[in-house]
Length: 192
Image (cartoon, rainbow, N blue to C red; front, side, top):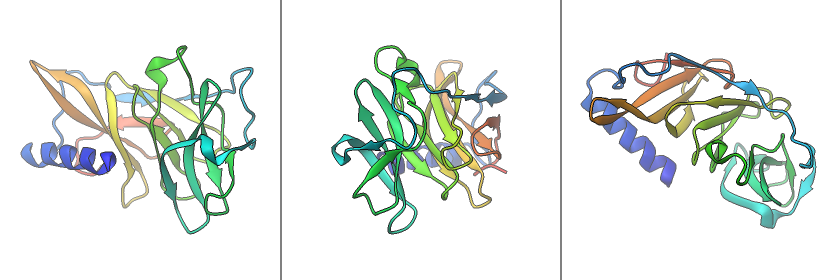
């Protein structure tokens, strides 16, 4: 529900701005993600986790295959299921460690198919994998990502709030054509 509301707000901003998303004076032009490595003392990818550790939204791309975030100990991980949510396994390294990484918090997960999975919300990052979880990349923005989705061309589109233009805050739009490794400022509606 929050994702839909965020998208409606961003759409309203875009429609009110004419044919393009409002851009702030001096927003980041390109945001390059860094490979996320597994912190010591955290679960290895592929570790079975209890369904009770799943939190937030769950995204299913078919009746059996889905993605979610899990809280295990003091860390949050991406997780995947292949049996409709009966069992879950971590699908990458810890994306956030409590207290140590507040700006890196993620609260939502999305999927653009079996390969493109992404997490955002709560912090200044979008964590994404272009290869189904084998490699995760962290892109850090100066604003707060409020929505991430896949456009009809298969590119990831992110709306980032918190860029300032004078006394007001505006949403900027970034597009990733490589599954979340690199994000470029793009003022065309829906990303090119």
